[in-house]
Image 1 (spheres, rainbow, N blue to C red):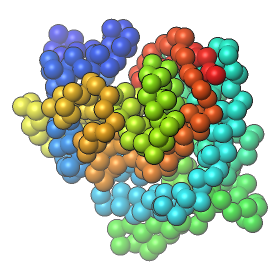
Image 2 (spheres, rainbow, N blue to C red; image 1 turned 90 degrees about the vertical axis):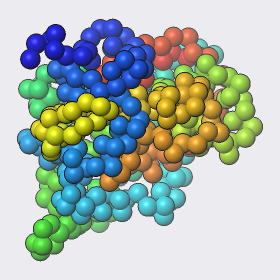
Image 3 (cartoon, rainbow, N blue to C red; image 1 turned 180 degrees about the vertical axis):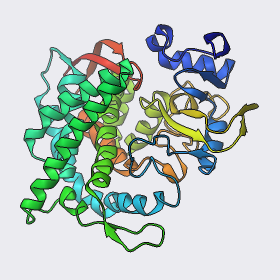
Image 4 (tube, rainbow, N blue to C red; image 1 turned 60 degrees about the horizontal axis):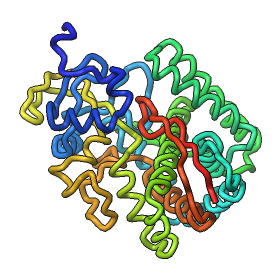
Length: 384
């Protein structure tokens, strides 16, 4: 297939310069668009809802090289692994964890320099994501810098589409996790989420229940942490910039913090930094008036779906009171974001503490991030 046969180039400089504007344009012009890198991209909320409701047609098992627990699996394999995942995000567990999140963000807000320019992404957002992850998993402070360095290497390799380099970086991450697992085996008295995972059992296809293999545990932890570190840090940048651009809304929420949860959902609807997820078709299927052959990669564009004018009235306008039933920030269906309950909790607490601990946020400049995330690579702000 030649480039003339494609509908667009998702990696073009024009798209990367302003991803949101590009996806808004594609949703109107070509709602199911084919290109070399993404396969068939779905931009409409309705079409994406259809794909999510039919996991038997739009498979999550997009890679044959690496296991991905649980979201890179289909039924029936997905079901028992997802059950293990979900036991770590119950209301009871998160209520117990909430004070730790609050201590992390409160300290970071207190440490922000006042009255001088600060780089939010490096000096606040990434640290918040990393420290909440460490607290949740029970990891020592010593892994903070290596994992932050790893995040940047992984981002650059993904941007370059360097599969060899991405493979090496993935192995490097696996090495960190295996060391942490070995440390828990050597000190079984240290009980935390990482240690608990060593004892979780899975039952597949009528076989006897067994403990998860190290490969499965590492994959599950990778699913949690890589998404947490990259996506949450990107969201923090989006939120800080939003309040810099909308100081009156920041003041309203300072006075009425009970509305913060609604505000966060709407901010992310407007500017979801987790751009896409992949699927592969198991059969020929018609979506949005276009026939997609079996065995084709499909890209679900969350950022576009949440800005779809047919799913949201005045879709490009901030309305925190609106219904969020079509909001796909965390996906939907059996593969809904594995860590969504934790993400919602830490983002609500982030905004509560950020607004309570500041009187004003003025953004001096931003730089747009490039795929595989949106949001900002830089947010420079003055905090008071």
